[in-house]
Length: 277
Length: 355
Image (tube, rainbow over all chains, first blue to last red; front, side, top):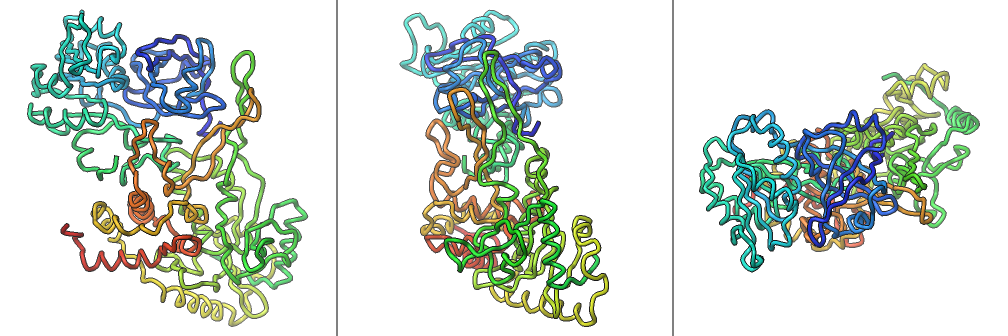
């Protein structure tokens, strides 16, 4: 087996999150691999449709649950469109887990957590959220600020409902002005405003943020204003990748390889990167 | 390192012996489409090869990282998909009369191929190959191997380095692989004066290249990193067409693409193909966003990767100074001249631009 050879996985469940975003639950075909496979929240993989190619995205399920992984994708390129044509029972390829992870165990445990996500950016954050919720007693306050352009663009709706019902989570849902429906009960604001008005305190808190670059750009100053030090803010970067192994040469931002040094970075680390991403 | 003396007849016999044992022997051969040019090609006997007259037009990396190679084959079945892995062992191959710049390129690329994850396909071929290089005396105005710390007699990446002397060749045996290749071949006793005349030839060859470009100082890498936003990047690549020809002739460019190609509706292959950071789609996201959207940014990546990122990460410049990119570029982008200008800039603006 060479490093470019994927594991075979079969699709167990398909959930349509939005009009164009879909979640697969995948299980390894080889029981030995299924038994041995572990990963950490924040890591990514190369998912492939045979005959179409490979595509890079995060593992969206929590690392605390074994035997399966989940991924969420938007049909936007050749491979993601091919993934969309697959049905339950079909086979796909998976290489991974690759990259670093959110330091839940060694940095974040014992502190408050603030999760911020926009649109499909919730996918990697969801992995961290559930990993954290599966060991809820190890963390202090948990706040989730999640928003999308419109109500129809919110992903993992059933889980949002579940989080909203839990008393040990402070959930703040928000849609951009104009994206609300008549029965929308959440906030109508863009993410930076929603974060500012969430009442979250920076003290003893780690923030995990993921979403479109424009959202991150305008939310970081808000976090700074609230008092978050740059090394308490974690995000995950995406760049086009092929190998995921530090060899094919396309995901680097200056000297930093997103596939190996990342994809998880602190805001402090990102500030030090050349502005080429 | 030991030395042996081989006559031309010894070399001829060695090639014949290897070919008889079904070992693939590669050497510079006159190109069929252009007899002025040389290509690394398979030979059956030594006479087919052309030694040391000029640099082959492409490097020999294709024997280690093929232009296209199958990573796996797949077949859709009723039960799902079956994968047939590509074997990682490669058949034995001897590269004869490689230029030292090409041989050292292999050693340089080894670093990225073993960084954490071992690329078994690359190392399978590396293990199976013995590289016999030849003192280079065919340098021209765009050669700059000495500037990157190598030289026309550099032994990096070679198993044997041959230096022509009176009556034959002085063979510098560098590795156990080289020892195995030359065991019992020629003479262990080197004729009197051979060593001195080899040293003289090597010195003369070095001097010729050294005149082209001074040695790149160690601090050049950090100067480049500091000057990622220097205004020079905005004009430096105006002549670049973004064709990627430089990468395809380069002995150290190793970037690749992975694509699936189907032979029928149920089977096909996943392939690794050469790719280049100079093409516009290299970093293009599916969303349409491109982190390196202009040719200036792409050329900056090429220079930064070769002369700053790679040396900082792996301690080696990702360039062997072969000059092929400069000879090949349709836009006349001349790397040694560009590096020379950057080195001057680094001297005159050690802290970078104030703009």
